Image (tube, rainbow, N blue to C red; front, side, top):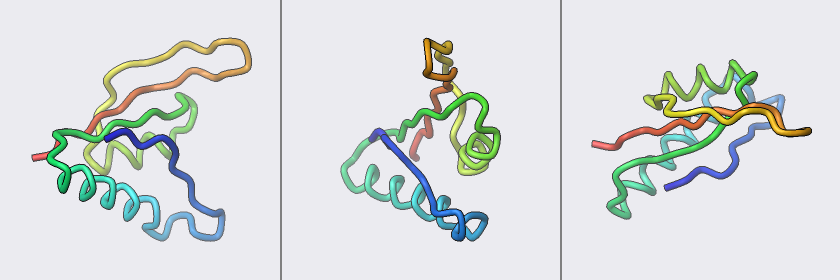
Length: 80
């Protein structure tokens, strides 16, 4: 399962909303028999990267900046 976009409203940040959305992605992938969840993040978004690592994702690759698009990182969570 690929999470294309994940965002929370400013007033909802640091309240567990993003973690709940990630948990739902895990549930959706598991219910479909998928072995992993993948997503990408901007390399300079340290808060998002910390959230993903804390939720069990590991960084698997990087994408260099290209024009106006900043550098990115790819993350995967293997489901059990």
